[in-house]
Image 1 (cartoon, rainbow, N blue to C red):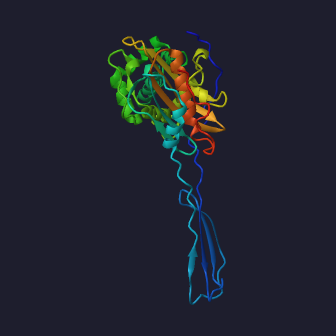
Image 2: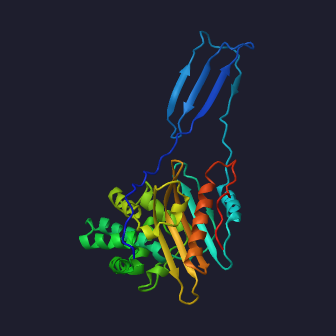
Image 3: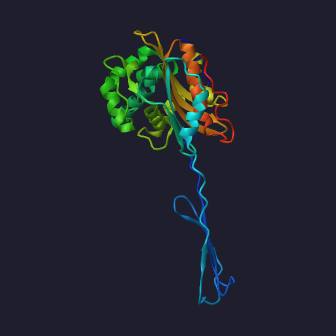
Length: 327
């Protein structure tokens, strides 16, 4: 396996939230003239007043009428519907399936497409490391030098031997499942015995896991998050594919998974991570199975990732552009 590593790209901080303002104006009229007071109030999303000004009347009006201006609510965008529409332009090979969940970190909006559980293949290595770090936190200890060496090989190079070593250390499926309860994953079950690559999961659960790695409300410490983000930003060059195709540059962090099922010869191809587009961060989880080759699976996953991110771009534009996979 090519151990050459890409240069470090720091993950952008997540959790930015814009303030939302509402304005209310009241005009007190006396005898049909504005002899009363004008009261303007701007209110922040957290309920704290930002501006309050008034012009008191010299005499209290005997008759008053109030006219109020309600805040204008922005139209709700159905991102799931947009994603469903965008997916119509993605060619899914016959017999294959794909599922995706995406989160706009800045706005908190999300979209999802597809259902059902998929084999994780090597994307479970992110979950294995998150579990190891959570266990170390609970034990109030740091990772050992050997654990760090295995973690680097497991994430950056997708080394299976290192993954098996850490899988055994966390307690295999039992340890993974226990940690996932803390993380909020509800549809993920660790693989039997040593078969960590056959852990079952959903795109929604993988998005939840990504929020543990990149989000503010996480069971992982800031130190643990930074550590994981750094490894996912230094993936070996031969694995620079997947959700990174949706980024508009080199600012991304990911982990890919690929597995040819021995019974069918068909491929599981998955990719999870953070990408930056036009200065906005997105968390994206794409799962797929049933492609006849690894190349076709990669093409499918990349097209789905592009379609998912496109629904948060200019909604007046065609969200299906450049979202076609090779059959």
